[in-house]
Image 1 (tube, rainbow, N blue to C red):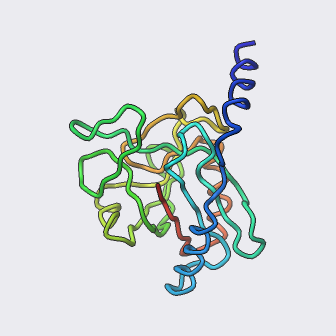
Image 2: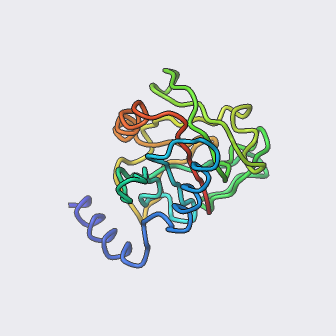
Length: 186
């Protein structure tokens, strides 16, 4: 009963929020991928300006110009003076536990503490320390598999964190592609 009420409330409150990737960011991603020999079939877009309980990670198919997959993704919770309750803040500094904005290359696949994960390489001055900060794409159980807005999703130590079920789907997609571009924006 409570789940049904939350679903109804979510549908009512979600009506004013556009949960689709920004067309300008899609165009920028295509241009960057084309200019920098990145994957020209797919990219991943993350809109951190949307509430964390919404779908705000999209796998975009450049060929068919459509969303292949979408899901909620956590943002960094911050640490110490960088700690925020629900407002997403961003940093490229080590030990802040904040997410970074900008263009990112999906790196090596590995199995770690959180299962299948992917190392990431920052391509901009706003995220050039991603690898050194150990910011990766991985699964974690506190992130919901589907939107739960107006409730927030889990928060990370800066990593791109998705639900385990969604990580399985992302992994299947990423296994078929190299040099995939992620564009994280606010």
